[in-house]
Length: 69
Image (tube, rainbow, N blue to C red; front, side, top):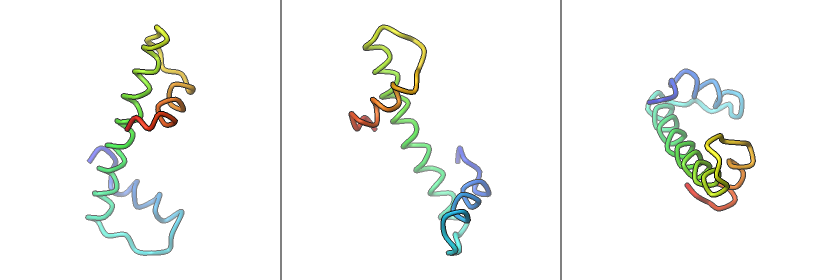
């Protein structure tokens, strides 16, 4: 997965006291990658709509607002 299971487990530890299995951490890392990739694709389109090649924070917000994931 793109995000190391140890990193994903650390994030889970900060929000829950439940044990997170290795396979659950792997799955969460894969899902996170898919969601982030969708947001970045939408942000690229938002920037392109304005004639820019550089992503700005507002492009990410626009992608999320458009639900482009």
